[in-house]
Image (tube, rainbow over all chains, first blue to last red):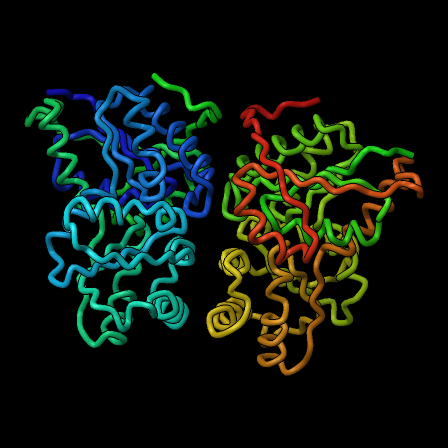
Length: 278
Length: 278
């Protein structure tokens, strides 16, 4: 058992959807969340840069005494999960594998679409994860880079997001896809629009899966296996850290976390350049 | 006279429109351009973060031996021009004042619209600059944060950019605006769409001004006044530096610079946190 907090990080605000699921499923666990808002978004950046940023974030959280790390960002998971597992003597989990496992179990046709940032899609991480759970899975990956700014700006409904979704999702119309992974923590905000566009263009409903609940379940398992779960009597605390001005974060955080999101503290992140190890 | 290069920096790729104008107007000048692509975009970030990033960029360029600095980014100019002028013993110019002077001279009605990032608009920098050139100017500022991702993704025409432009520019319909400043170096790519939407909704044409040519003219004046112009016989060289993977930059650079854009070199930028002075 351990009373230490879990460290959760994301490029910005999207990872709060994972925090919300963790709070619901693991109310005894304390959480320190780091949103790297001074360098968001990660989705279009190169692999080396994303890996360096993820290592910076993990170092900062380790200095805060976390017992385990949750990478609540698909792009950072795609490019940096092995590097973090190697660099830190802590259990580290990402958002890709849990939802891939769920998708493989749910899909009847074996045709699974994955939408994500350019980085997540280019990495092939979902193809790899899905192949491990379902040998015959056919993956339809689509990069949807404009969904992040739409979600951040709160343009969730109406003509613009519908037309953007229609354009991105067009390749799926004639497919046998029955399950779609929202492979970016921003995308659940656009879920109603994405569902409507798919329903209309495909004439049948597609199951939309996001990473939040499955990652929270996987985190519970990881803590139990490592003997690091919090004692049942503990009331989990939540602390938010951001690398840019906390006021901008507060404006968007409520959309991802719901009411009761605590005020974030500002923290400077040190960009070490070299891939430092523990 | 000085054979040293001019240092030009931007949050990413947009500042290449300024470089293109500099190359045309000042062919004898060598230029080192720094695109902070590992931390782009600046437009939604807090003032302190943008100021720190601008100081980081200026330090890097000074270490390259530049004789003068051009801030080819509206948000960085808005938040960091005085800090840079104070911190460095070099002539420093931004993109806000030159185009503001041009707009004040051109407008007949005195009603001038400014569109830009959230940071640029919140700073009030254009109101300040326009007031200096035209005491009675009425400024209509509009933040258009989705224009940057649209331009970066190359969604320049069609239903989505038209609808986004229509939504942002709606407050101008009943105004007396006859001049609009494209107050972000990304926006010139959307100029045809913006012009079409304004023509259609206002029933008359509005002059669209961008910063590139006026900033290049102001740079020439600044160099002449400081006695730092390049000798006429010199053939100006151009070197590009970026803080993220140069391959991603090359893909979008051609849209802003046109053909003949040289391959960029990668450089690590040091984030000093403190506002170091010379």
